[in-house]
Image (cartoon, helix red, strand yellow):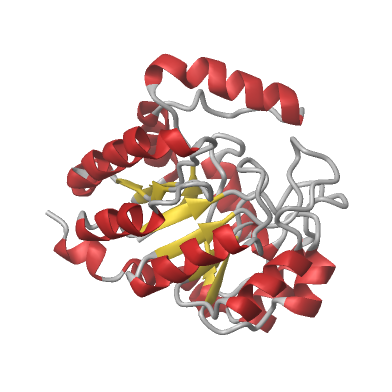
Length: 279
């Protein structure tokens, strides 16, 4: 089983505008148009069984519509291969109700993006959300490190992530981009090896690595130091090609056993009963 634990999509009527704006602001090409049907076609080409959508509420008012779509999406995930997390904004004062409703609806987790939500991850507003998600047995996925669209951003720095973990011990915590995009040395110093923390591989490998991407040697070192049983395959689609991302992972130097775990075994374990109990 192959599970891409880090993807994004947008409603068809805004996909072109949303993807175009993000591609321009980040100076990064998009490999898909941001529509769910395009992810399905990409998955079929790459041989991926499931893709996890990680929606982001950039305004407090957006969670209602986004979470409604997530709940509907998950009703048919066994036939479509598309799983969706829910979302919440740090300024949602009714966060307890929002998170409880997501848990009751069987949504497996929530996504926080400190940079897009303009809130430091160690801010009390984020801490209360993470603690509440823990109490409701939800996975928490967080964008980590720098962001290509916002140079010099600090909201999700490794230092702030470490502060967050000290304040709220992890339960089912996924740190995207191997714990901190373009901040890998800091990740190794402060985050690697933290219990109950999974790292995803989204957008960290490149055929010609530079300061923002990991060499294969550094990547393998981080995987084995943290533990290959707590690494999740992710692509950040539409910002990378799923087939190419899988190829880069498979040619990184990891063993077949490590690859089996990372490509889907670890994600299946983390998702747990969601994969077996949801109709």
